[in-house]
Amino acid sequence: MKRVYNFSAGPSMLPLPVLERAQKDLVVYGDAGCSVMEMSHRSKPFAAIIENAEASLRRLMKIPDDYAVLFLQGGASMQFSEIPMNLARQGDTMLYAVTGNFANKAMQEGARWGNAVAVTTSKADGFHHIPKITADMLDQNAAFLHITGNNTVFGTTYNTLPETGKVPLVADWSSVILGKEIDVAAHDFIYAGAQKNMGIAGLTVVIMKKALLEREVDPIVPTMLRYKIAADNGSMYNTPPCFAIYMAGLVFEYLEQEGGLAVQEAKNRKKAELLYGVLDASPIFKNAVAEEDRSITNVTFTLPTEEETKAFLAMAEGRGMTNLKGHKVAGGCRASLYNGMPYEGVETLVECIKDFEQGLRK
Ligand SMILES: *Cc1c(COP(=O)(O)O)cnc(C)c1O
Image (cartoon, rainbow, N blue to C red):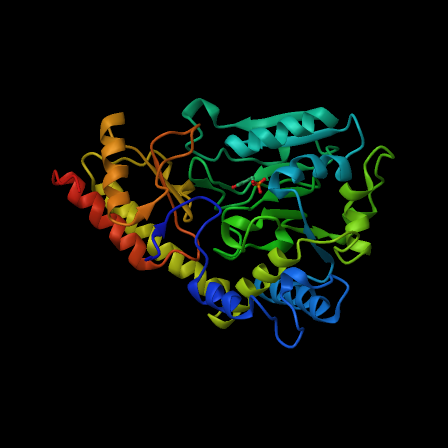
């Protein structure tokens, strides 16, 4: 069967050469005599896999030496709880920029642990812009400021980071990480679920200032949820998600071969510009996001009625484009344009949009 253009927000399309490489290695990995799925995480081949993956990610993202890289489990959602538990004592003040669905979920988990404060929200305009944040808006004694760098559901993004003063900046970059250059040194803490743009589900990557590992952690925090434990054990306090780490390693290696993140960013911008251009010129398709806050990886759009939305989605599906339906809290449509989505996929989508405008329905 032919591969479709899968516009899902995640899990999402992987670069074809990565899948083919995994296929080649699937039954027997190198001279290990077994597959990655069957090998001990304490074995030599796996030690090389995890070390190479970290080294490759460090080169790609230009991660400074005073940052730790952790390979964790539980998804980005687990970080909503783990961050408060490691960076704040119970009852401490933590600041949140509520710019969408996942930002809100993160704050709700923070509220279980301490005094989670919304410093700003874009709820009033349906999360269609990113409110500016300056240091004078922030309690300078807060444990951290949490932002959702790229709002997967509504299609907004931080093109400039907030000024935080001395408050550590924590960012959820799940849906754009490796899709553009991110200035790691401008953050104190970055996290991302791998299944959007780094690989497959089961792996969450944390990039954090090593100094934050020294913050005192309340005794109630479980061992498995302590960053220090993960860091001290090379992300292998227990069995790590071996295959997901291997897959991410293949993605990192592939992106390095392709020329790094500047190359991916240029490709992703080109895809996004093509789509936004057609949406902006359209009499019926609309994108409601403030132009300066538009995401290059998650493009949301609407049609005038529910019937037309359904008809468009069916037409797109018929042409080999899947998962264009918007997230249930946002409605409408959404095209996720991660690194694995080829330019031709966006051209096919744009053609479908234009044909729909002309009255075609298949
Ligand atoms: C998908 C997503 C999440 C949730 O990720 P899980 O790995 O499913 O927990 C959190 N934040 C953002 C920005 C996301 O896009």
